[in-house]
Picture 1: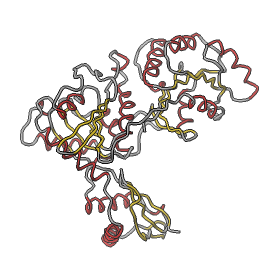
Picture 2: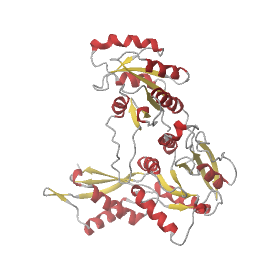
Picture 3: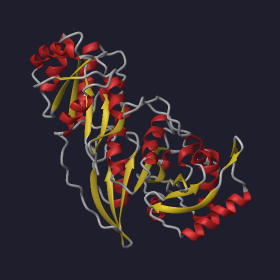
Picture 4: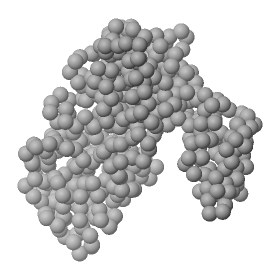
Length: 436
């Protein structure tokens, strides 16, 4: 299901990031603790009264040396373009400022619903200070306190009223849904056209030609597919060129609807940090992944080039060590025939179930090969394991004390499971539960 998007907009120093962290429910760190993944966190997921949503913090956008009001305008424009609901945040201690009025003028132009939040109202005696904010023209201001967590529920109640009720496209179980994600201009649309064999998607050298996700049904050798082509950057212009990280938000929407995600890299440009950030979301979402190196025709090659490039990918994408790598050229269609078999394999493994008896034989053999660890005199005891779900394959291991299953030993068990069953192209999840 595609989640609605909330954007938090406002001038600097009104507490946008504090409110963002409150809504997400944690302090978002800059460095992700998954090996090989680092990224700025200006977007995350939240939940309120059974509503799941994505939320973006425009305060995390680095516009560079643009003038103050120009920065505000650009941030607001991004929010207007990407969000379903906008939270316009102000500072109750400072009252209505000219900068607030500038933001309001920009937001008047959007057809998106705007919720006005007045931050830093830390106690009831300060509530009289919100009345001036009616002059901004967005209805009743909602008093909140980011530092104390007051009024956040009221803010989300107001936002949730405007969440769109979208009808999801229903696909039969035998349809493989896959999306293409990556930085602008890595050749996603060209790759879709190469797969389809016709010019179905507009292709341009200008980053961001594709405007929205497009579902394209396709059948090959009796297998049905639905291809979801995501936009790289929607608008042309400096603001989008300097905020490439926002391509991830659109990628998130496509990832949520996919079985398999193609992480598309540009062979000419090599690997940059943004590639890892985008790929990290497919991994965290538990989707099957195939890494596609496009524009391979443009690279000068010898007999070692492919092997060396593959090693670079493995070094940079440590968290995607299970993902197969395909080298191809959408332009010349060279090696394009290798892609769909990999998509099929990843999809099959993503929905694979293994027999409980065979799984437990593998686990017990692993324990015999490498005994369970001890901590403070206590040894981990593994009683049995079972697979509880697919997409991705998820296993529960029943033990005496879950905290004794350290990350390194969990990784060892995952590797033994992969050795036995393959699972190429899909993450697998392992949870420890105490046997009652």
